[in-house]
Image 1 (cartoon, one colour):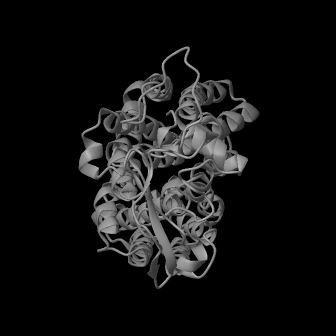
Image 2 (cartoon, rainbow, N blue to C red):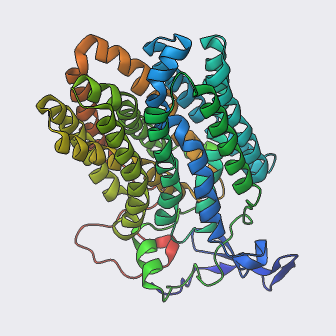
Length: 473
């Protein structure tokens, strides 16, 4: 990759700001990069903090989705809520968590909702959710407090944390996004055991209230230090018009080149690939939520002890979270689309494995398939988050990813609520077979995901080194 002879520098000299000096450079396609300011110039500390703090924030909201069904038995006995109500509670939570992604992204990108404010609102929603589970006099209150308020709060935190990483690491976002996204899974691990093995009718209110208060404080503290970089910001040590000397960055940019322009949400929504990504995430997220909702009751129905089922769910959450970071790093090395295809195949195949292992009564096989399912189910989210920035740019990524992520509006209801209907009609066998088949079909769909506006190389023609804006998808 050599300097682009068609590139122009849009500012003849450095521009001074309170943070330091910068200049804007433009590549041959017209994309603008703001370079010269370091992370320390902008916020007074290294940008790694914008990986660590979002990771902490994501852990603070994870238990509401990944550990909720572990509390199903206690909530059923304590409030006399039916199992159907409890599964639909989770579905409503997922619905609102996804519904807020796009409007939150719009508010974030317009500057009307600073990152700190979004995190503080999310912390309050988390607290209200757990208090409603503890003290709700009627299930309707739980739908409002946990389903809506906690779901909206979690959506604000999720959208803010995930998109923060892509803004600070535009040159190598896959691994960092995956690491932060992983907090959304393994932050729930201690609560799976807490709700399964410790919480009962004598202490459930105290446990839920304390958990809510602690997680509220965790999210609020992390979010207090959030800071966005300026629009079009690019790390000072990476020249976007020349090849970098860092082999890791060079490979990541070659496999996942930056978007050809900064797409607004309206422009992105007019590209077919945006809606193909939306549908692919709908299918894969639905499978993931189905596994989260029904693995515990399925394991119990198959005769596994409660401790074994809790262990399986915890391993699923751990691998789910770890898989997000690992897959993010792999996608930096191998390309986002190729990695997504493999993940869809793994996710679909794992559903068949969970079913077979349960029918066999094989505990080791059940644990293994549960972990594989968790790995695939978690990996899809950082892949789509990073892919959205790769395809449509970083400036409007919160809103653009909000569009893609809004598919979870439907997948949450399908995976949890409608999943209960399918299980009732077809039993677990039919439900897991359907989930596995959808996963395999998603892999086929992923073959057609290509960055908009970037011409594909002709077969048999060797690609010459090119600047960032000219690389292949």
